[in-house]
Length: 337
Ligand code: DAH
Image (cartoon, rainbow, N blue to C red):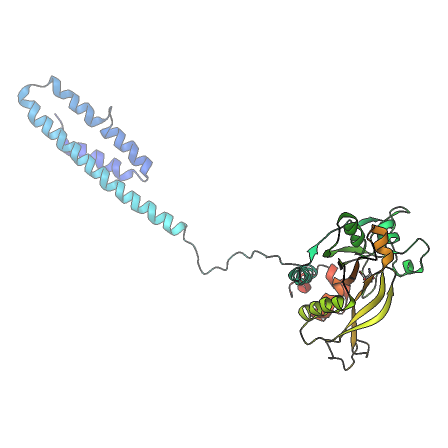
């Protein structure tokens, strides 16, 4: 006969020992599985006399209900314990400081370069580019500086071969663009240039922005208007502007453009060496000889050109006194812009 009490006792002690859901599963299989203990008891039914069948069947079914119920209770108890364990082991301390991800930013030279471009683009100028490794022809010859021209001395050049150099200025882009396009022309040419030169205000590589405007009736007053507008926007609208006679082989007449010293407002200081003025760019009317070199008829076309150093303008804008700071990549310097 079935001793339900001792059956329950054994079952409960085994259930008690199950400490995890997988151990509980073993108990479930042992008692309720297809080959489990209770299923085995039910199989005895078929061989029993009819009068015993009823009470035996009832007892086994009750036992089965009891076992199922106890297992379900244990299961939810184990589940709660599991959850508690996970909650405490996986807690997040939301007061801890986050992980620091350093964020990059634009280099001050690129920032000012972009400002310069934006100003000229707003005045209808396009943007052209040319190679940094340049032919002597474009860098000098076509700009009215033949091989023995003394003006070449001003630009100490890096030579690749006798005829191939690192460009010393962005002016060769004037020639390359005029060879490709017919007037009217209005563009700037920003880029890197190279000179064999290094001190507190010179680095072997620096940036220039060239400008060129060509049409049938461009005059010096167009040049003044464009450059004054540019200077007032890149510095401030109160900046005074002065054109001083100068010489460049590729322009005639030529001028150097000064701005009233933005540090002393013209009264004279260390930066402007007491003059009250700061030189910021070179400019002039395109020399007819240059037009001839590219096949433009100088009797029909006139134009102006200008060239400026981006480092110089950036140094003046931000009061930086050593050009080498731009290229040392010291983050303490670069983060200030
Ligand atoms: N290319 C000259 C230099 O690097 C700057 C310059 C002066 C450019 C006058 C021009 C210009 O286009 O008209 O020193």
